[in-house]
Image (cartoon, rainbow, N blue to C red; front, side, top):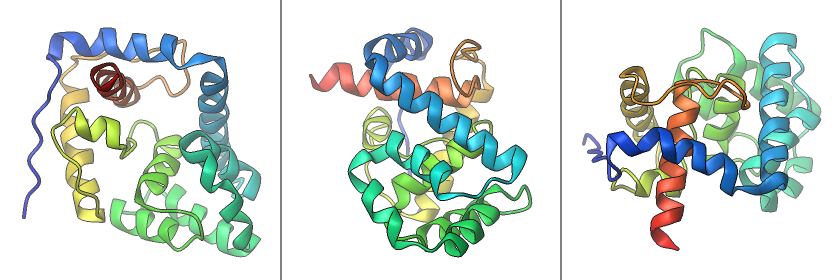
Length: 186
């Protein structure tokens, strides 16, 4: 079964929504997002497959599950992050490696991947999914969601936000979809 996505906000509103997202989330969430993408960069560029970097990313996505991370050995974290950060890993193998970690579900795994490779991955989030008229979650669904979001981002309807963490069109699109959902659900 192929997932169907229908963009709820107008394409012409996406760039504004991406900008609005950053201004609306507040300093704490801005700080968490910056720390997450710095940790992702340390994982990708320096091979720093550490609990501290994993925790910074997970704290950004879902602070309530951070305490579960201590249930993972340093070796298990290192192994999962190494697979996730490998340029040769498929989406499925990267997600499956991260799902082996205690405290990591599909939305958190997608956030970890987005922090490591913001040009390749986006976050599977209920708000972004709502902005696309959908809510089902599994690895293959994430691959379809990711492909849809990449096509949107590559169409140049949103531009990289060069002054923000992870200045990629894909991350700007995620911010826009999230903001659209937040502003439409009160």
